[in-house]
Amino acid sequence: MAERITPPWAWLEAPAPHQREFADSGVWDERTIADLAYALADRDPDFCAFVEGEHRLTRAALLEDAEALSATLRDRGLREGDVVAFQMPNWREAAVINLAAAMSGLIVNPIVPIYRDHEVSLMLGDCGARAFFVASSFRNYDFAAMAARIRGNLPGLEHIFTVRGSGPDDYATLVAQGRGAPFVRPNVDPLSVKMVLYTSGTTGKPKGVLHSHVTLSFILARSCRHWQLQPGEPTLMPSPVTHISGYANGLEAPFVCGSQTVLMESWNAQEALSLIDRHQLVGTVAATPFLVELAAAARASGNRLPSFRFFACGGAAVPNDLIPAANSAFENCRAFRVFGSSEVPLVTYGWPRAEDERLAATTDGEIIDYSVRIADVDDNDLPEGQEGEILARGPGMLMGYADEAQTREAITADGYFRTGDLGIRTPEGAITITGRKKDLIIRGGENISAKEIEDVLHTHPAVSEASVVAMPHERLGEGVCAYIVAAGDNARIDELIEHVQSSGLAKQKTPERFEFVDELPKTASGKVRKDKLREDIASKLGRR
Image (tube, rainbow, N blue to C red):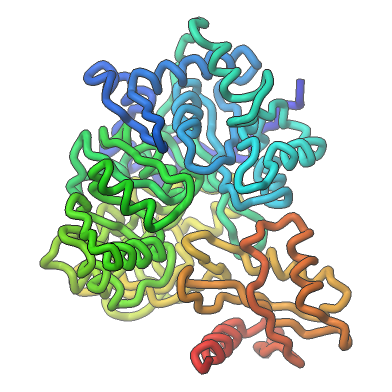
């Protein structure tokens, strides 16, 4: 048996100090998704909760599979509080694994499929995962082989389970083994940690965001009301279910909102048109590039998607003219911007009403439930309309990071999360994002740490200095640009690309452009002026 590792969040109280007010006020629904799943199945067991391609998963079948998987996992030695990671595309098995974890008191660690050896090792090692469900293969990449490669460096990882593979440790075998086996649900504290989700930070080390059973449920219930999503209605989920928006709105919404999730394995605008028509889908939550491409496909086909009512978008810069342009392609759909992060999901819920189209286009959404401060560098509150860092506090915010020091740095003494985003508050009670303090690149909704890439580039002998910044990207919002001060005359782009790709970083982190310079602009204290580099690359791309 592998070594059982004490999780790094053992110091954390439940509820966390900044959450006690919400626990005392009764705003949380203190039920897990397992509790909700049993209640919904009693009411309508044959309702289809998940659709993936031609496969349909009813509430009754979902519970049956989750109970069977839970029984087998317990038989394999997994106990309450153990971490179970999963890395796969938007497959229906993710819904069963997530539900089984909730009913077993296990903590889930969703990992986005773009990550490879380096990132996955950091995440699994940091949270002390005891089991890892991984796609056998996807998009010609052998995830099972990757898991086998990194296992030797993870003393706490006892089980590697494949999904859509074969053998005794494959998901299908585990479910089959648990059929009919006794399973007694343990008492699960709904205020305890239910998920650790890693997000890129400015230091290059991923931060483990901790959520309880009640925080995400609160956000979902509130968004369903705000967007008027009714029980039984079907929604589209093209965002990765291992990302915060896809996880909540894809895997959890069918239990909290009573809705149906239609999963897309990967985004394709033409396929999305077909799915929306076929299933009469009413809305989605997805990255901004998806909205642009869906609207373009709707115009080209003449299909105005009459069933579609809402599209909540975020994760990338949204030009003011994008929302009305997209709305004009649809018959009834209202697109709107929302603002949130893994730490504070949906601080704003957007402006879904037709009469609020101007606000939907020019702001990043109406502040709901959260208390928001706009602060200067000394944490002093700034007046309405003045730019500062956005600090947010509310019942949907994180419990903390896995790392205690990171938590102390990110959460103020009065319980506000420092988002690292710059913005202003409008007279209508909305937020407009104006910039970012964090050194992150948001590529198609995915956070990419610049420092992580810089650290790899600095190990190449032809590189004297490297600085990585975001550059404008027509489709994805931001791309990756590397500024290089070469060590001599032998720096070649193809070799630098190969060096990054062979490092174990996700392919998406490979710089799409290299700029060679004699020196990097710096402050008097020697810090690289990345604002100048971003201005430089934006100017160059604008001229071209």
